Length: 123
Image (cartoon, rainbow, N blue to C red):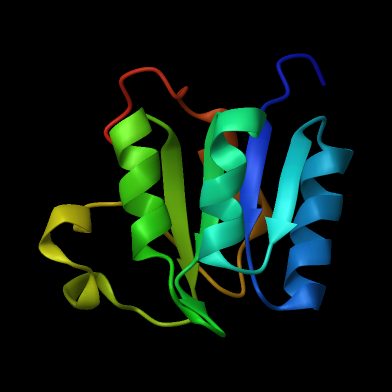
């Protein structure tokens, strides 16, 4: 696929991370990670320069909100991935961020990845 993107995955469930990775690679994208911790994801940003990110909200060691804020500050597009409908639980500065519900629909996930770029993206 021409126009594949560099996509960061932050997901602490190994099977979900592998499934996401396989789906994205099969559709011509480059996967960064998958990372299981927020610190690992943040520490990778300067060297990996993702265009888009998929963030599990609830990690074994905390939440992914810090990663989301760092991505937002850098103008990198992201979506939260969660099994919970949680728009009211997002911090005020992250409300309105895209949310992809798990189990995710492959077509919807790929449509999110394909839409937009990192330049001047609100999230």
